Image (cartoon, rainbow, N blue to C red; front, side, top):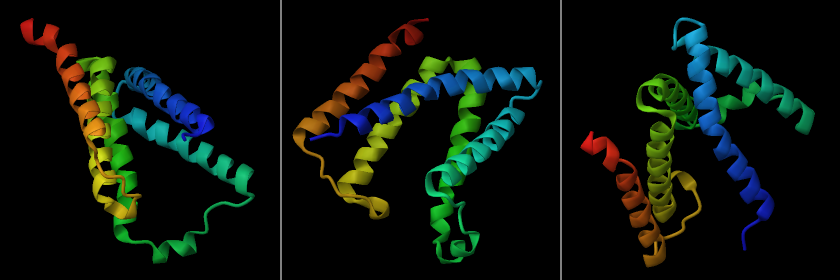
Amino acid sequence: MISIRYALWSAAAGALIPVMAVLNARLGKDLDEPLHAPVILFAVGLLASLVTSLGLTGTIPDLSKLATARPMDFVGGLIVAFYVISVTLLAPRFGVANVILFAMVAQIVCATVINHFGLFDSMARPVNLVRLGGLVLLLVGLCITQLENINS
């Protein structure tokens, strides 16, 4: 059974992604340089993360423990930077709905592959016919949303 609290929290986080895309694209326009917006976003995000960590745990990260981390574990920072920079640059050119839709479909397909094979030490959750059917419907839905763009 799913946790309603976790489902709502996840939904709220997902719902804010297009808001972030629009606001960051607008900030880039205000700064006269779109690539400066992610710098500001990450500065604000770092401050918010530090305050949250301190408020909820009473501590901030112990940087000396980073020596035991695998180098691959730091790639997440590069991935989030790539995502934020991409959304900031693409939203005004491709439309926020298109950017988020393509990103979301790719996230679900990639997450399914990660879970199916248990990659990166994640929980393995093999794909079954129902889940595969859902992925097919998702991809068909993506194609349907783009029909108008193909004809114009």
